Image (cartoon, rainbow, N blue to C red):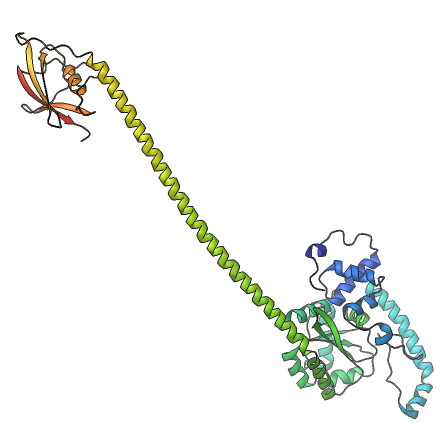
Length: 441
């Protein structure tokens, strides 16, 4: 029942071609076996020609009906769902009593069979709440026999199977028949036996329901009890919930407890193997999770290193692009300055003769200590001074021309609106010493 494909379990076409009766039988079979995959349930039912009894016995590893359920005596009821089931006759006196009461028992059995047929039609004919069935039975049991009993699971039979599989514990299934003559004694004695409640609380899970309720009736159809009181022991074997023991008929409290303990003990090996397998599977899963976590952490570290390397490469590439752009701009500026020097050199007038009255001798000191000595006319514009300095090979790119006495900056740079004054207007004498200050220094 395990390992079924989840996609098959949710296949929307799973119910195609099924009649209403087959649809109900499919859901009933899933409840009885506790299987998770409806696809597996349908295949199992189809393999058994939609025989619910045969399919359920196969799923629960129970022997066929011919072996497990011998034919009852002619006078016995077909199924004691609501009829009185007499104890097996023993001795001459019991045989005479059985013979004397044969007509009455036959009548009761026939009526019980008719009632069972009607009940089966009612039970299978509409939806019901299995959890409510179990809860109501527990309430009725405690109202009749008291709260001292094993801890009954308050859930459906399917939920009980799932819980036993999950917790790897044996599951005790008790089917209650209120009309049976041995039921009251069994409930008041064996089920209320304090050692049973103490032992079962530590060791296993206990589920109970009345066969007079739809949920209990469904379970009885799967387990096919022969008599009452009826108790079945179900454990996980080879990944399947399997019936490993059946207790039918009256039983003394101590004897009942010992028989249950013996069945559980005989099948403890399969549960131990299942626990070891699950622990190993959990350990392997935890190891894989740790390995995955370590791999993810290593991957994140590698990705972070790669991200930082990429950022460093991008930064270096950006710096290189900026450096190249700056170098290109500097080169363009140099080329532009060289072009301007060529153009402006043609606008510098020739030096006047020494004997001309407006001749002025000016010495210009550059930032590197070199000097430019040249004659100018007092009628020349101060921009001629600027052109002379600008066209000199050792001139800075951006500069201003100053005079120390009086200390001032000569307005010699050509502007877009006003033309610089002449040397005479600037107050320069016959001989002057001027300085070039580098504005980028």
